[in-house]
Image (tube, rainbow, N blue to C red; front, top):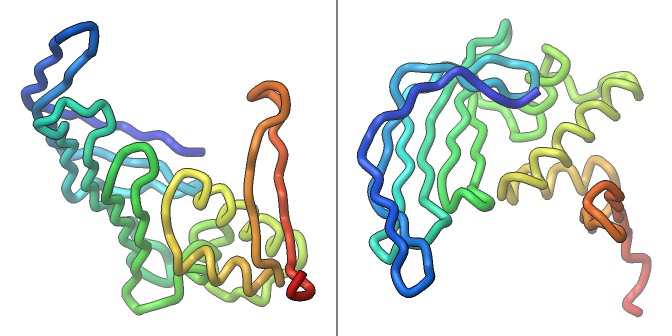
Length: 171
């Protein structure tokens, strides 16, 4: 699962002005760990900054890495907290999809068995719900042979609806 062991420090101000809440300031990550896709990443740097406008959607900039048997993987999370960009990189270099495969299955070979392939695709799609990653999105679409994946809810949040589509013609 996702989660972590982190300590943050800094100065944040919260004020109510004209019936609206305003938050300003910044907090910085101390050494810690972040769990993602079943792996423990060591936080190298982390900063959450609330804009001077008092907007409640802060800017996030976190860099964390994990060593796997095949590669050193670095996750860079940057942008607005509501849906930041996620860039996965590795040493030696691999595609975003191969890195997800490595993190999910322990190997970067994307010619996995059908059950492993389903796990990889599910994890990749799950990441795309929380993060913006055009490279991973494109690779997932190519792997699945689709050109649209979306998640919405039915009459309540407890009724998620997954939409997968493939355009077969101009109309």
